[in-house]
Structures are given as structure tokens and as C-alpha cells.
Image 1 (cartoon, helix red, strand yellow):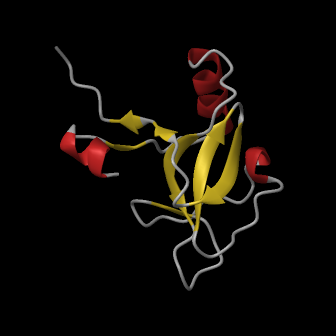
Image 2 (cartoon, one colour; image 1 turned 60 degrees about the horizontal axis):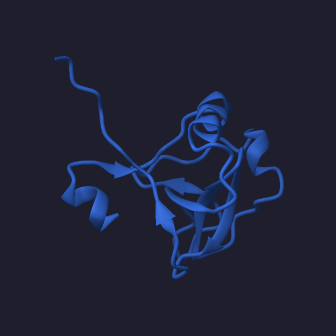
Amino acid sequence: KEDCRNQGSVLLVPWDQDELEFLNESLQKPTRHFWISLSVPVARMAWMWENGSDLNQDWSALGRALGQSGACGTLKRNEIDPQNCKTRLQWICQRESVEI
């Protein structure tokens, strides 16, 4: 999160399954996990985006990723997988586009 903030951006928030599929193709079918802005804060049992909004549990990519307090979300292929938040992984930042 800190690295993204230092670049004037935030951790990735993929909004739907189509965006996950686009990322999968853009990253050339990654076999590694990448941090995104999804987590299950302590004392909660539901996924939440960094901006405070709840995750739409209908996402097919989260079929097996049930909320577990203290877990963080990673992107791998077309799926969002829970990981221990202290695991060392790469991350994806995003920022709003600017018209030139």
C-alpha cells in the first residue's frame, strides 16, 4: 500500500470478472500471486476493499476464498486467493487515467 501511495496510486481494485480476465491476459497468464487491495480486517469475517466497500460475494473467482480474519487478497490467473498478509509478494498499483 505504501509503495502505491508513494506513486500517487492505490493497490489494484478489479471491479468485475472481465477486468480479472483482462489482467490475466495482460500479465501473460501469471503463475505468481500479486497483492490487490482486498482484505478481511481483524474482527471481521467479510472481504473488504481498501476504500471500505464490501466485496460482491457473487464473484465466481471467489468461490472457494471464504473470509478469514487477517487474510489479504491476491490475484493469480483469473482468481482472487486469500493469503497471509505478511507473505512477501509483488503487487499491482492503479491510478485514474488522465486525459492528455
